[in-house]
Length: 284
Image (cartoon, rainbow, N blue to C red; front, top):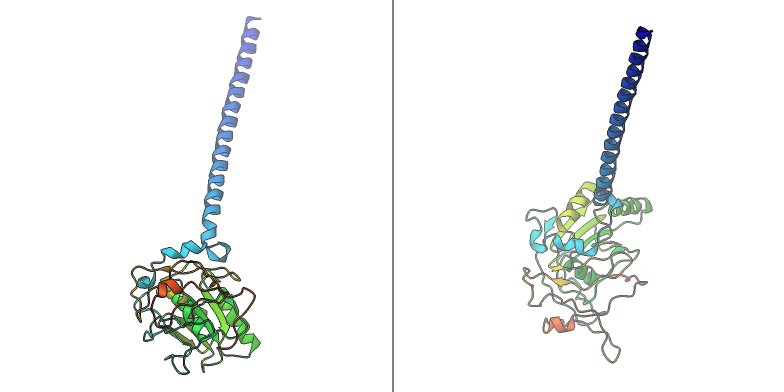
């Protein structure tokens, strides 16, 4: 009888040990699963923070362009042909135009220009050269085409939309006054293309986008561009000072104010009315 009681006590001990072993294994498994879950959660959080910086899925605020270094951050040996600087004077009135043959290249890359500018994005009608140049002064990259082929224009538009941070600091418009099918312009830079070359377009945009003589605040199509913020390191050409950040205004009599074409008192007169959002400029 004593042996049987001893055997029964040993059996209960074994059961207790088995239960303890199972509990330890279960607790270990719970800790492992908890650790894996926390790791996955951390990865998802990091990925969620990082994804907006890649591709077209992210959003870029206007002020994000102010850290690109301005005009002097442009590469000295960047893509395109360097064009002689024709200055930065302003015409007096919104409808004023330069004399025929004034610009040394068509499309132009610098020179006397309109006191107003245009929005970012797509245009179905040519934009006047004088307005093109003002946009270039603000750091725009203009993508211009001379083609009536809708397939070609569609391919070029798709390539333009794929450029970094589209539509900020871009203008896409027809321009019939050139022999090349495609031209890209930045301040003092011109790139002519015979076909849709996405790599060349992206290289040009990366070098000059938001790096004009005036640091601007960007725009979102079909919004209107804010007044430029002067680049303190830029030396104005033609004797005119960079524009101020004053908001465009109208004179007391309702007329539109433009900056002086002779470069005098440019800071006081440069606050000009912005173009209507729904209008697209007609031929250049």
